[in-house]
Image 1 (cartoon, each protein chain N blue to C red):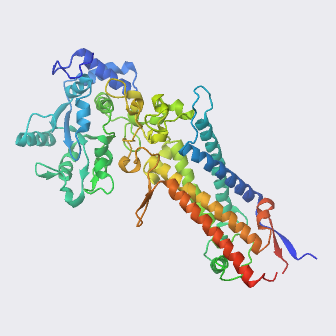
Image 2 (image 1 turned 180 degrees about the horizontal axis):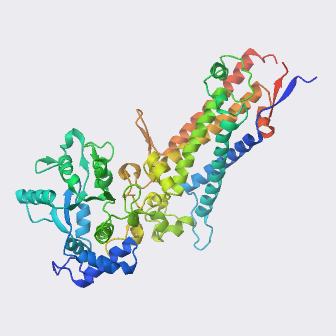
Image 3 (image 1 turned 120 degrees about the vertical axis):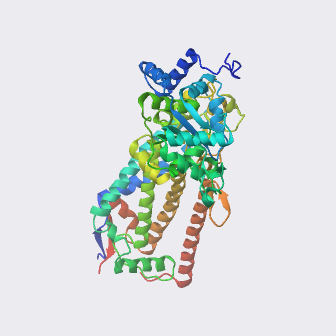
Length: 214
Length: 356
């Protein structure tokens, strides 16, 4: 007797975005720390190890994957399925505002009620939107540092950051948000999977969630 | 041996020095040698452009570096090809006579304006006064009549040290006050005299200002990143760094990145043109670049021996490195997550498992 029904939730493109984004961030953070403060020192001359050159190369490769992932997410915010579009997570409708309130109550252990919903809850959706905007700042500041002489990036970089050094500073500080986000994101995914089993964690691999039969 | 103290004190420039100076400027501008005769012709023309040189909030270091460059030909060439009608450091006139020279040129002749030093704007600009007038008023009178303006040094371009936080006198650069005039910024603390000379000779030869970047700096001098032309760059890519001043890596001439060199974010021709005729510049003698040609460098490039500025958290007095603050916030987040989980488990233990 099946008490659960299968619901298609995340498109293949969204799952692709998620893993491109997550894996590129891991590489970007590790190589970014190295570039900021290289923890090795090549003491043997003529060893041709090129650690800084290689770290920078990996950083740029991962940065292009990251940028492509953000472009995919932007596309899905506009043209994705019902769960992926931006209006599904903005607290602009009564249903969404109610969900935001209920989620806050549930997360702070005040209430046990859970707002049944196929896509993101509004609190999660807003955190993702903030991360999406932070990602755009990372991309613009990154390309401004990579191509400072290119008129396009020079113009935008100077308008937004004022100088190379300030772009570098912001790029470094915002990186910490992605690490903090990862801690909270993984914790809350596990927490939700324990509280309200619907196959949340496997859904980012399979695209499928399970809901109680009404 | 170079005539570093100018023993000869010969006021006129000999032909050899004249050609040498023009060739140096042509090389700095990236012009072909075929252009040198044209440049020589322009520089030798009888019509010497009139130049007014205004000093505001500054240390006169830009003028000093220009005049005392060990290459006397450079300064002499410059003084030879322009008619310097007003320059507080080198003019012979004083008092009313100096003022009269200034007004005569401003009112009756076309002239190039060179500004050295920042302009204080707070409290109607009373923090810098010359001949009873504020720097703001002087600039307001002189600038509209100039054919073009060259702002020399980081103070005149971006405000310099006076404009560093909290900027008590409200100091700004020329481009923040003057509009509608072609402005060339030649930042640096001090800038290389060759960059200034190149701009002037370009103007004389082609009757127009050189191509500029978005910060109005001539591309021939500020178009490329110091880091990309640094003689220590190979050590950077190979991961050989100076960890502390005076260590083995420092003695071997390794990359100064980890002791705060700002070469990767600074644009200037220092590694190519170098200074003082003896082919030196800060990085070649073992000190990192401090980024003196960039806007707000006193605020964003400090601490000079760290990679990034410190994080200042308002209203707490906390000033610490970005990574220390980041680690603390990440640690607090992890602790909060742990507490949240413990509260959840505790609640379940007390209330019992809810019905599925």
